[in-house]
Image (cartoon, rainbow, N blue to C red; front, side, top):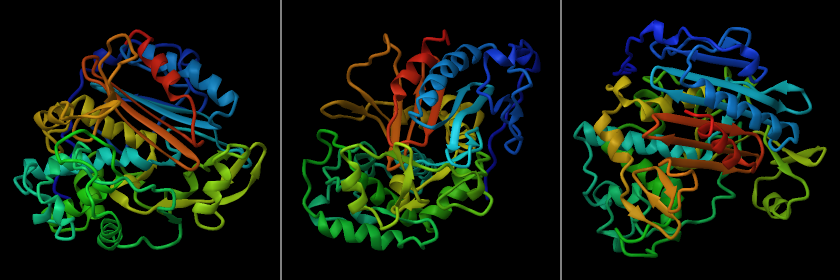
Length: 411
C-alpha cells in the first residue's frame, strides 16, 4: 500500500454537545467519530451521539427505518450519514430472519452497482497520477473494444455516453464459493456479443453495465495490476475499508446479511430460471431466502461490505480535503459535474441524478445498487455537505422515503 487516508485533526469541542441515545439510536450500534482512526470499532448505542449537525438527519432516518423494517420492507437496514468531521452509522431490523440476527453497521451486504462509484474513483485517481487520459480512445488500452468504437473515450464510459449496449446482468452471478471468471475473458466475451454501438459516442447518456466492465480493463491496463488488486490497495485500504472486498472473506462471512426476494412477485419465476440453480434457496414466510452468491464482473457491481465502510468512501466525496492522498478535491468536484444528459438522468463521472429534482431544490448526486435480495443507495448533497448510504436485504424497498427523512430533518 502506497497511500494513507489523509487524516485530519478535529476540534473536540465541536463534538461535545450530546443528544439522548434513545432519541437517535437504531437499537444495534451507532457511531459518530473522528475519521483519523479507520480501525475504531462501532460505539454501543448506550453511548451518546455527539455531533449536533448530523443528529437531525439521524432522527429522521430512525423513524422511517423503523416503519420500513417493522413491515419487513426490507427485513434489515444498515444506514450511515457523513458530514465533515464525523460519521454516524447504525442498523435496524434483521440481517437474517431465521437466525434472528440483528442488522447493524458491520453487517455485510452486496453492493451491486454502487461499486461503479469506486471504479470511477479509481479511474480518476489514475488520471491524477498521469497514468490515464480521460479523452484518449479506449481501444489504445483495450484492443478487444469494438472497432466501430474508435472514438469512444474513458470519459464517455464514465458518463454512460459511449453508446454501448446494456445486456441484462441477471445471470452475472456465481455461488460464493466458486472462483471468479477472469475479468478480461468475461468482458471480451460480452463485447464480442455486443459489437454494435447503439448511439454516437458523446451523445445522449444511456446506462451501460458493460461500459464499467471495460473501465475495469482500462484500470488494469493503465496501472499494470489486476483491477481488484488496484482497488484494494489504492482505494479501500487507504480509506480504512477493512470489511469490504470482492468476495466473502472468512472474517466477513459471519456478518453477511441474507438476501430476500418476495415469493409472490411476478419477477420471481423468471429470476429463478435465469440465476444459478440453488440461488433461490427456500421460503421464509412471504420471501424467498437467497443462498450466498457473488457478482460476476467486479468493476460494475462486485463489491461486498458493510455500511460503516461505505460511509468512509462516502466521506471522500463529501469532504475530499480530508483524503488528499486518495483523490484531490478538484477530481472529486469534476466527478460531480454534469457530463452527459439522458432521457431521465443527468450524468456526471460515475454519479447521476434525475432531471426533475424532487427535494425542494436540494441538489444531489447518487448511485443505486440492486439485484436479487438486496437494494442500496448512496447519495451526496454537495451544498449541504451531507452524504447518506443505506443498504437493505430485500430486492426493493422505499429508499426515497428514507432519503426525504434525512434531508427534512433540518441538516
